Length: 223
Image 1 (tube, rainbow, N blue to C red):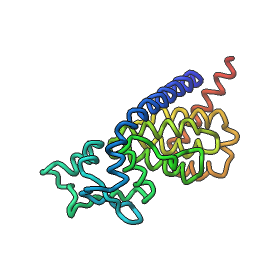
Image 2: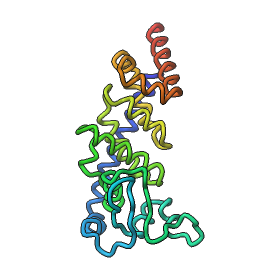
Image 3: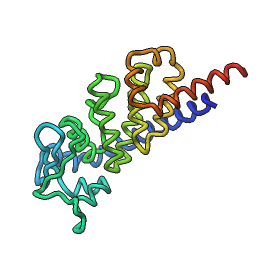
Image 4: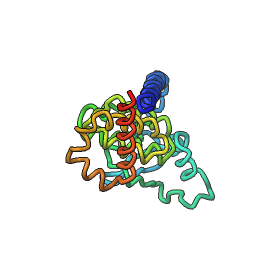
């Protein structure tokens, strides 16, 4: 059962990567227009404030077109959450994360700085972007983040990715992939220093891990 679930999760991740590749080709065309507008900062009409650092100029029309949440925030006359003074705050994103988030809305591509295989900072950016994609309803970005995180999955980062995937509505396949990695390398993961802090924060996930390990052991006995 576990092996079948892992196989299905991996197939879903492969499909996500294929979609990302096709989407990147389409984004090349869009980049000629929106990408230039992002790089030049021409005719911006709103400031987006991160949790730290200076605000970033953007275009309301682009934000509203890419995210239903931003559409309601910026375009609805009746929406009380509409930002005053031409500013909107995304305090959960650091300045570098916000820059990557906005760049994706304009170009449809993830910058190389959002690569799970480079540094812990890059992994942190991908996690933040995945959560932001879920919060602001940008599923295309969410799929791109999930594909990169799945491709870089290993015992050293599985717990961190599992924790983030559990927080987002679209993270089912990524969560299953991370859970499978934890179970497959249980001795390395469960006896690590990181696991103690993870367990304190995520009692429910620890229950799931325990059940998955017991199911694996039971399957091994039957075999």
